Length: 171
Image (cartoon, rainbow, N blue to C red; front, top):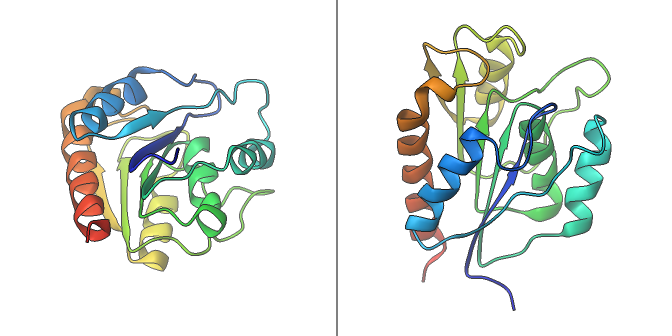
């Protein structure tokens, strides 16, 4: 049975499916009635293989939200063309790196990007480029790549996005 509301998380390159951010944000989603899933991609460091794995899972819902952190941001953004989510939430997305620099397609209008000014893994310019090209809301925080020190702000931005996604897809 297809769930009405679903958030599908994609974790970063070296983290796991239930790290600090995802665990925190999953609770934000559950409080709003969303089911949550967070596949384990730790078997591969290849972003294209992770994307293929997500597409093979083919998550579906009346209101699907994709959420990704770092390399998971790349995976979530690239999955938009196939999965057609109602909303996309990216945290320090690892976009535009040599070898996996293709532009995401069919990014939903409901799209929020959160990035840390002090990110030493993914340059903040990558988030700016994505946000400008896709007219996404961009939140720049005094934080590092993990953003773990800004969980309340992440939860607030994510919760607002989920609320908007529900309104946009509810008749």
